Image (tube, rainbow, N blue to C red):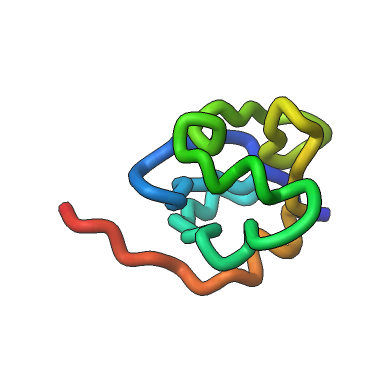
Length: 80
């Protein structure tokens, strides 16, 4: 079973995630927030305010993504 242990806001809709196996991966959620409960996340100030809950990232309105889904997203290369 995979879960998120840390999450850090990077920029725009990009979050750097750390999984329980030590893997770190930056993901861009811009194309995942176009409907339903995810619409409020289009507001970047709202998007930035996530926390770890139930082994994944969650926002104040209850929106979250399964850790397995986050793991399956393409990795974004961050500039050093």
